[in-house]
Amino acid sequence: MRIEPVGADGFDEAYALLDAEFGPRGELERRDVLAAWLADGERRAGDLRMRYHLLLARDDEGAPAGVRDCYVTWTERVCVVYLAHVLVLPPYRRTGLARRLRATPVELGRAAAPGADLVLAAEMEPPDERPETRVRLLAYASDGFAAIPWAVVPYHQPDFRDLDALGAAPAPLPLLLVVKHVGHEARGWLPAPLAAACVEHLYAVFATHCRPRDLEAPRRRALDALAASGLERVPLLDLAALSEAP
View 1 (tube, one colour):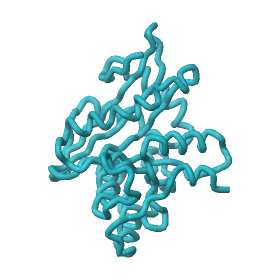
View 2 (view 1 turned 135 degrees about the vertical axis):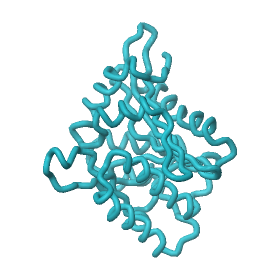
View 3 (view 1 turned 90 degrees about the vertical axis):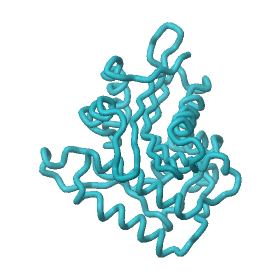
């Protein structure tokens, strides 16, 4: 099994796999958005630097086995790697590939910002009755991830559709913000400035392809709630326990 970065070659194949899984749920950026990220390389927003990575796993015969994409966003002191999507195709599940795809962003973050605080951040659907949701929560729990409480950071993923073309009102998705402060997984809390950085960095990514007027309200809702909590240390929720919640 090999994992290779995708550029122009292989993009259509990787995007089609992601689109089949995440497109129907409204959780995937438009094709032109991701193609532009790959073409541009590094982008900047003030002192924040950002780069998109698309990775495709292939088996020994060259058939696609899985896809991972992520955004590495960093300043001198803080690096947040936004884990946008991960997909392991059914024949390759429970082979260790999912763990390998979850580990690769750590390497990308450390290479971009050596010495910075490194946080992996992902959006996840709240616990529900579907067995695949429970499996996903348990997998991330086993890899050192935990959830920021919704009451502290009421997080929404913005609407990724082309709303101007559709003439539609935005419909942001309420999702759990799931994090891993690399090297500090055991302590059960996240410094409030890093929780704020997760929101700020992710919304800087979204600002490259979503309308600014659609971003300000959910961004401010999340950050204002965090500030109003008065917390210096944000307690994190155990994903394994969440997976068992009724």
